[in-house]
Amino acid sequence: MSEEKKKITIAIDGYSSCGKSTLAKALAHTLQYVFVDSGAMYRCICLFALRNGFVSNGMVDKQALIERLPEITLSFHKNPETGDQAILLNNEDVSMLIRSFEISQSVSQIATIKEVRQKLVHQQQLLGQKGGIVMDGRDIGTVVFPHAELKLFLTASIEVRTQRRFDEMFNKGQEVAFETVKQNLLERDRIDSTREESPLRQAEDAIVIDNSNLTPDGQLKQALELVKEAIHQQLA
Image (tube, rainbow, N blue to C red; front, side, top):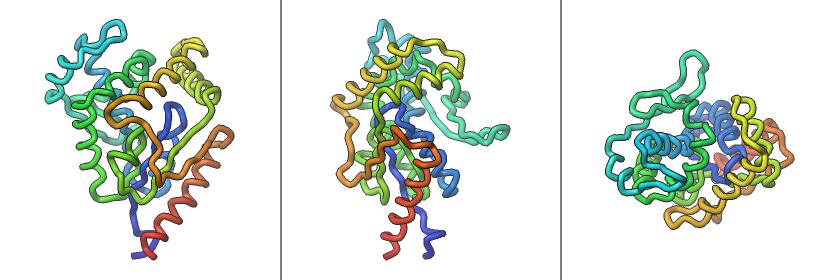
């Protein structure tokens, strides 16, 4: 099989606002792979929990959510107008709704729930059975695809990450103070790294990319070289 036809599994992990989805989307587009934003899946569960009153004063009614998990179906499809990937929660396109600051404040707590992770990890693994997939998240290289042919771990300084998230929210008309965004990211880092179920950590065989001073194009170029090397190793 030629390098052009060999398709691998690419796992991208890292902290919030490190550009994981930006890189994953660009890689998938360039390689003609399937892109899966695992974080969007957890955000959908969070939206469901908020809509049903399972989140109050920063606390999650875990048992109530667990009992309702069988009611939740998630699917991906391409928006015919924009070509972007959309995520559906029970057949409703919630791609924009899940990007609110309210969701960002609670999603890490939702992601600590064992039953939620089990449900979504199973679905993610089914999506990646045939390879040719780029998935980003926090436990992709360690739990979802431990045997992925290429694992990347993205990192950036907290100041750079905060500015990125602040700019993203500002462009969407969401007015949140810079310091509030920073504290939210730090708290999400803490929860993601210390949770009992599938904590965020760098896989031993992951390649680290610090993109604090990289442009999206520069990051993509570096990643594509690593993809080429990984495919070559599989064919050797």
